[in-house]
Length: 335
Image (tube, rainbow, N blue to C red; front, side, top):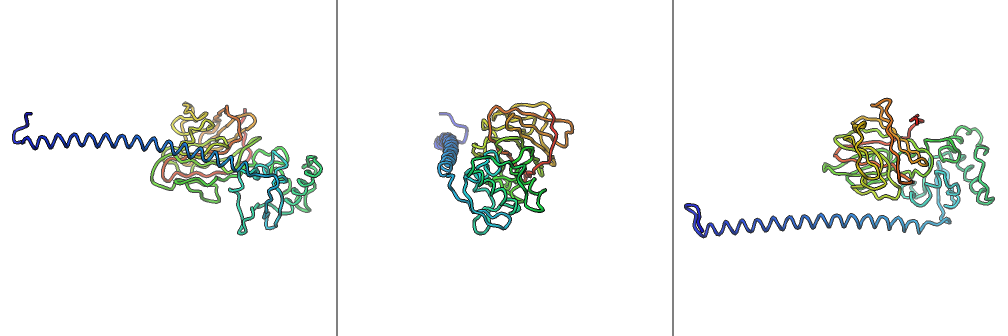
């Protein structure tokens, strides 16, 4: 071997060995990195399988004879799951179906707290119990309201979806997500709380089963990327749940998510910090619509190919990203 002037045979051999050793270390590091990535994917798949199994176990433990203690506006009630879920299409049926009890507010004694007028709720519970005995559906429009509470009683019947005609029976809150997201302001606000970027999602508390739901999302702070739309109620809240086959909605940079796939929409430029975004989901028609106050006259529409039920779905990416969920007043989206 020939070595540069001034370099001994021993020095050349050492440098060659060092180069070989460096190459081996790099190769081993690449192999370990690949193994770690593969392991992470396996763990994510196991986590999703565990979540599905947990959901199945919850469903298996739900019984119509389960008894709930309810604190309704300060008055205590006790009733069975079968009574609360007798009206299958009502909000009460969704709340006490077995999927959402863990996310409902409770008082200091552990009773589920409902901030309703207790006299009006007592009237509703009475007619649900009567329906169970008679097997006949209550004629809610003709039910007599407690004295002096007619206006409130009518609105409560609409809110609980016991009478038709209410499009805005929407609960504006999020389920508790994993870090890096945190929930603020009575559950309606979600914020990215760590300085490490990456996809992180949150699901709405309410399950959207039938009818029309309308909600507003305020983009309080947005630094790069955010997504807003809907996802199947059976989906698991993973970091990449935007790619779930049941994910439909709008992101940034001309992008929509349709069935988990990115689809370019040239008329849609993306969200901006400060945007007020109103969405409306027609469950039966399978149509999701969106309006942005900054873009008057524009209505964006996505037709879903997956049947519900659904939940509101948002995904944030950067530290400081923050958005808030509101129930919306009647909004005309047109055809």
